[in-house]
Every structure is written in C-alpha cells, then in structure tokens.
Image (cartoon, rainbow, N blue to C red; front, side, top):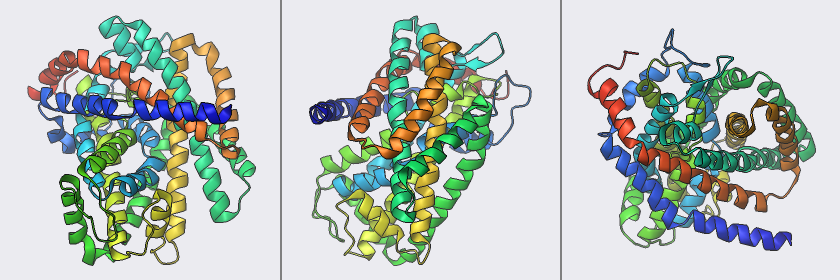
Length: 449
C-alpha cells in the first residue's frame, strides 16, 4: 500500500512540476518584469534598504529581520544538493538557466512583498498579518482561494519545511560524525521549540544571526574551491553558456545533454530554490517595519538575488569547474558530486559542507515554522497554534528517523498547489503593484509614507 501511494504521489508531483507549471511560473516572472519596468535595476538600492532600519514605521520586525527569516526558509539543501542534481541531470547548461530564472524571479518576489504590505491587517493585539491569503481576500474578494492556499501551505510545511530538513540533518550527522539519528532528532526538536516560544520576534532574531553566518561560511568555501580551480574557470563559463543553448557532447568529463534537458532542470531548480511565486515569503514580509509597500517590496526582492543569483550560481560554478578539473569525479549523482567537489578543500572540505547543509536545513525549519503557523491562524485562529506546534515538534523528531520518500513527493505536490492561488493574486493584482510602484519608485517618493 505504501509503495503504491508513493508511486501515485511521485506521478502527481512529476506532473504538477512539469512544463505547465514551469511555463506558468517563468511566464509570471517575465510578465511582471516587463509590467514593472525591470525592478531588477534597483537591486543595489534594495540591498541598501535591507540593512537600513525604517524607524517609526509600523510592523513587528525590522526589514532585515523579515528578509533573514525569508532567506532562512529559502536557502536550504536545494542550494547545494538541488543544484548538483540539476547539473547531473541537465548538464552544465542547467546552471545558466537556473541563474536566468533567479534574475527574472526578482520581479515576482518584489510583487509578492508589495502586495503583502498593501493588504496586510493589524490584529487587536497589534500584530501584523499578511500574505497571499489576505491579498486574495481583501484585494480580489476570493477568501475561498485564500483558504485553499493556507491548507496547501500547512500541509506542505510538514514536508519541505520540517521532516525532510530534519532527516537531511540527521542522516548527514550520522554519516559524518556517527551521531544516532534519534539523538539528532531530539536536539533539533528541542532547539526549534525554544526558538518558536518567542514567536516571530524570536524566529527573526535567530535567523538574523544565523543567516549571515551560514551564507558567508558557505560562500567562503565556494570561493576557495573556485580559487583552486582557477585555471579552469574560463572553460567552465564557456561550457555552461554553450551547453545552455546548444545541444552537444558536453566534454570536460560531462556526457552530452540537450538544450531542453538543461532548461528543464535548471529552470525547475531555480524556481524551487528561491520560491519566487510560491507565496511563502510574503507571509513574513507582511510583518516588516516599513513606511510604504514599495520599500519592503525592494527588500523582499533581494531574497531571490542572494538565494539564486549568488549562492546557486556559486554552487554551479564550483560543481562544473570541479568536474572539469577532476574528470574522475562521479557527476551522475547530485550528492556524490557535491561531496567530491568539497572534499578537494584540504582537511576541512567535508566539515564545510556538513556545516553548510546542517545550518541551511535548520534555518529552513525556522522559516517554515512561521509560514505554517500563520496559515493555521488564518484557517482557525490562534487557538489552534499550540496544537500545531506540538505536531510540528513531533514531526521534526519523526522526520529524523523515518524514510521520507512519500513525504518528499507529497510536499512537492503541495508546493505546486500553493503556487497556483498565489500566482492568481500576482497576475490579477499586477495593476495595483504597478500603481504603487509608479507612486513610490518611478516618481521618486520612496521615503514617503
């Protein structure tokens, strides 16, 4: 029975994340990029705003705190193992398609952040709530679609944001350090429980400290590998570009791939990695202290920039250059390719990779904790939060000791279903986003309330 269910879910997941979803998401990215006059041009302004406190503005956490929580959820094992899988299946060209997807996805993440602030609500105790469900309810009068979004989010969170992450940590520490998986599961459960007791402020504080550390630690490791592979970087870049647009026998240790394979796996990994269009990030963006919707929209857009345009691109360069430099590396399996590439760092390579995956996975749990709780709160109010937290902590422990093939496929399916209501709100409210952008950005009123 379990095997049959697993096969069905695998087929459903494959269909949901097939070309129709890829075209829908990438089409939305492109449409919003053009409609909003390429907000990617303002990325450096956005980065500056992300580290600037908007004093006196309404909100629960700082703009950087909201961004850090969002990045915590999006920067995960997909940035490491996921990119490796794309390279293994789609060839070197998948790296460029992943990068292009990230660049275009900045416009979608911008729009999500804008609508999150535009349609957020303040509760009786002063807390800010927002996200696609509120944009659907208040902007489009489609509360029923907002409810569906929250149902899909609450279910998906147990997969992508919980069990599969704790499983990744437990399996890795068992393999690298010999730690028993139940022990690891218990430690993770306790740490997450301690953090979520303090709500969004507690989650944001931990993420604000953890995200910069884990990102810098991982990036330094990548840069060191690229320095070692320096003589092959020109060949690496040429191979990535040519493989993205020309079917060929890839060479450099790679087998031949088609343009369609490179595009499919690169685009799918980029979309799944940065979550632009998924609808998760605007849930926490709504809690940000910001004086107008466009300021937070710009800050939110940097999440996709850091996640895909920077980190995924670095990972891709590391992997492809490593295969060219060391043709004996097994590049047919994503996990094996990643381990082999980082093992080339003398003495500490495995440690760098282990710390990177553990911190990425743990931060993802924290970020998705907030998303899940706000979805549950929208569905049934705060009275269900305690129950959900108990189930959430229990699931973290179970995820560390169970086989999660079925859970992975269920989570993938729910993620795709999350995206559909969110994309409806983005496309139908794109006029609102354009109007707000015109007022605050195009007309130079970014500092106004």
